[in-house]
Image 1 (cartoon, one colour):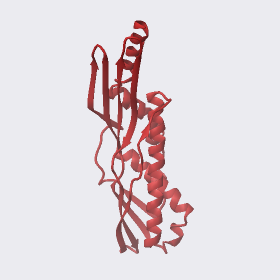
Image 2 (cartoon, rainbow, N blue to C red; image 1 turned 90 degrees about the vertical axis):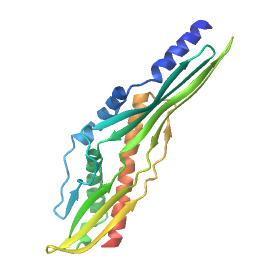
Image 3 (tube, rainbow, N blue to C red; image 1 turned 135 degrees about the vertical axis):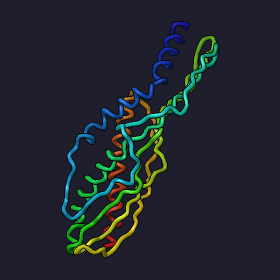
Image 4 (cartoon, helix red, strand yellow; image 1 turned 90 degrees about the horizontal axis):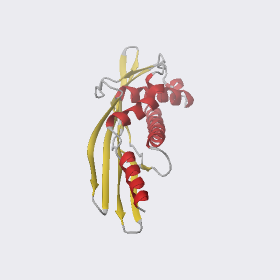
Amino acid sequence: MKQKILILITIIALTSCVSTKTYSGYIEKKLETQINSTDIQNESISFDLSQLEVQTNSVETEKIKSFFIPAILYWGWENTIECKINPTIVGKVFKSSFLNCADSLGLFNNLNEQKIEISIEKIPTSFVYTNKGNTMIFIIAYSVSELEAIYPQEQNLVINYKLIKNGQQTKSGKLIATNKDKPIKNIWKSTKKFTWLYIDKFDNNIKILTNEIVDQLLKEI
């Protein structure tokens, strides 16, 4: 019984205390395709990312809370990390998704020789990873409770647009797509694969928000 408890404690100590550097590595590996992707271009539209927050690294992580309590009959832990993806990387996903959606919905065919200038004011870039739980150790048994989850931050997609014809502005406005992304909990996957699963979900959520922006813009022009 003592050997089983020692093994259990070792597993908990190793899996619940991922460092910010290690966690950043998980995300950076998954983001390589976005970082190295080629920008799609269209002469009828231009994008301005200058209003977005400047971030040097592709991923920035900050440990918000970290503790581990190794008592005799009770073990408790929590490891919470805030993660920020470089807005430029997310902006590239937005640009690519916008052009694909605009093409499929016929946006460019409705411009009547106008051009669009898109300025991204806000875009979802951050989420919080957490791993917390406790172990109650009894004489002949033990009980473990653990939660590993990722929580998206409350960030909407906000863009400003201008319609230009013959060098003159014909219309302008602001469009907002409300972020409806939900937290996810890890059940069976490793921390790395769980994080990769969320990054796929995060990428898809940006595309959903972008499609909503294109739908709104179609109603404006």
